[in-house]
Image (cartoon, rainbow, N blue to C red; front, side, top):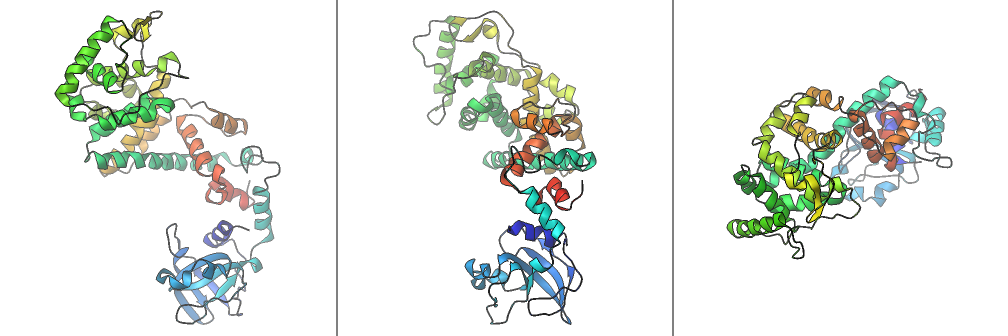
Length: 427
C-alpha cells in the first residue's frame, strides 16, 4: 500500500461513499474533498466534511498508518492544527491535536472498492515489467485520452525548461538577447559540450558580442579563443596564426578571462559536431542576424525559423574540421535535424517564457510550430512507438520524454492520466 493511492482515491472520491463512518462510529459525509496540496503542510486544504451533525471546514491529512502523524511530528507543527479529518489505511493509534482533542479518523480499507485495489496491484506488479508499468495496456487506451495527455505533457516540458530560462533572466537582469545567446550556445554544444559552451556563454559579457557582430571573423575568434581552442603552439596554419594574434589583441582590449571555462571536447563526436565547427557556425549566425531575439520571437511559422538558421561555418572550415588538417571540401551548414534541435530546445522554450512575460497565455503558435517538426529518434521514443503509442511529431516525442522521465521512471502512475484511467478499469 502506498500513500499516493490513498491520495488518489480521496481526491477523485473513488470510495464507497454511502454509510461512511469514522473509527468512532460517527456518520461521515464528504461535501468537498478540498484542494490537493503539493507543498509542505496538510495534504488537502479547505475540505468540507460533515461528521455527525456538525459540518467542518478545514484541512485533511492522509497517512498509511495513523501513527505516522507522530512519526512525522505533526503534533508539533502549527500547520496541522486545523486538520479536521485524518484519513488512513490503518488506524494503529488514536491521534490528538495539541489542545488534547481527538482528531476524527476515517479508515479507508473499509471503503476502497476491490476493483480499484486489484487494478492498482496489477499496475504496479513488477514481475513481468520490461519497460514501463502499463506496457501491456497502453496500446488499448483511447487515442483521445493519450493525445490530450501528451498535449498537457508538452506544456509541462516547456515549464520544466522554463526553469533555466528564468534563472538566466534573473542573472542577466532580464536581458532576453543574452538569454537567447546563452541557451543557443549551450545547445550548439549538444550533450557532450553543452556544459562547456554554457560556461563560455556565462563568462563572456554579451555586450562584447553585440560590439563584434559586424565582423564574423572577430566573433569566431573570440569564441574559439575564450574556449581555449587557440592555445596549441604546435599548429602551423596561417588562419590559426591570424586568429591567435587577433585574440591576443581582443583579450587585452576586453579583459577576457577563460579560467572558469571548461574546455570543449572532440572525443566521441562526429566531425560535424566538433566545437570548432559549431562555434564558427554560431559566430556566423550572430553576424548574419543582427537582431536575432526579435526575429526569433516574431517568427510565426517553422519556415521563418528555418530561414533564420540557414547559416554555415566560415570559409576556412569548408575543407577543415580541426586546425591544420585538410579534409574533403564541404560547406558546413546547419542540417534540418540540427535546426530542429535548436528550435525544440531553445527557441520554443524562450517563446513560451516570453509570451507569458508579455501577458499572452496562448500556446497556439508554439503548438503549430512543434507539430510540424518531425518526431525525434532515440531509444525511449522507439520503445513507446513499439508499444503502439502514436508519436506523430516533435511535440509528441517531447511529451513522451516528459512522460517517461517525469512519471514512468518514478512510478508516478497515479499522477498520470493513463495510469488513472487504468486504475479506474477503463480501457
